[in-house]
Image (cartoon, rainbow, N blue to C red; front, side, top):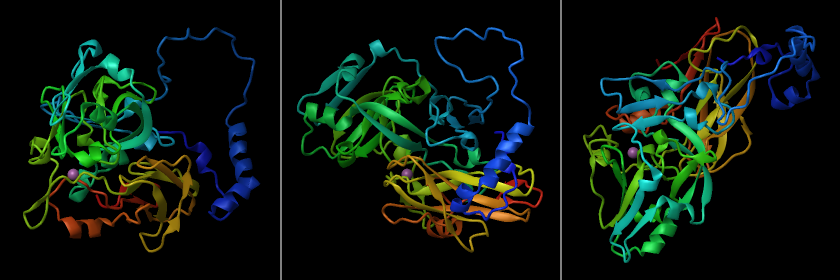
Length: 412
Ligand code: CO
């Protein structure tokens, strides 16, 4: 857990942002705490430090890791981003969640090809060398598994890593899919593409041609370096705002077709069974959602005083327009501030100064995106969709802070 000493100092001002910024007393208190906690001295031993390494590692004092729950088939399963330890909006590639279906293939980029064929005028095979020579684009986007928060429907989990950790946000660099499709000449009867990976199960998804021509990136880099093997090395799709399963990793083939394939990942999986027995299919867009990451489940507030509530909001439909926070169980809501930068279809950091008096409180966040869509309450979401599905849960999360400072999922 992070050292939150600086956040724990009593604040005599009211918990408004302006008052907080104006209040010299707060900063004096924080800085005083630093001075009290030990003198900075230059009288220690003057020894040489470690020799710089060719590839960086984080400090050995940093322990945050992905949450994995290994099953009998560990090659098929998720790992979850430690959102409780996140800063800003970007997820380190090393901590970005994974969802695998048949393990991580080892691919030599000199042997890897991307085939684009089907209903096209000029089927083409691209080598990695050729793809890297094409004009590149960089976009900052979140990726969220549509099964993220899936247990919140029925059996809510204790920590924000487990409730919301199948979520990450990166800068993705690659080539516009529309550029490659224009090179091969898509025929007018082609209404879908099938994207296929080179993993053991040849994971594939059907994607409407309209989206394929819009803003999909064939990415080879994540956060400024080559995509890591578990994230799809050497090529993956980035399908802005759509469920993570469509972001096909280890991409090796795109076929232009006149209808969807009805593969496993869009029939028995990643469809949403409704109360009437019918299933929603091709529910691609990840709707607006937010969650408070501090304080969150299994945190322990050391005592009454000043804290900063912070969290993340995102929408597959564009920019997050506002985030509101309730500290009284949903009776009233106040506007949170944004921590810039803010990008469309990216994680957006929000925060709100808060003075905890030591009473039991329940903290909630809800967001509104640029389309005007409001994140629903858990009750409204269940009323609309029932409890048959494990996908597309975007209801409001509630963290209950008990009088002893312990924090729990209020719905658990
Ligand atoms: Co879906």
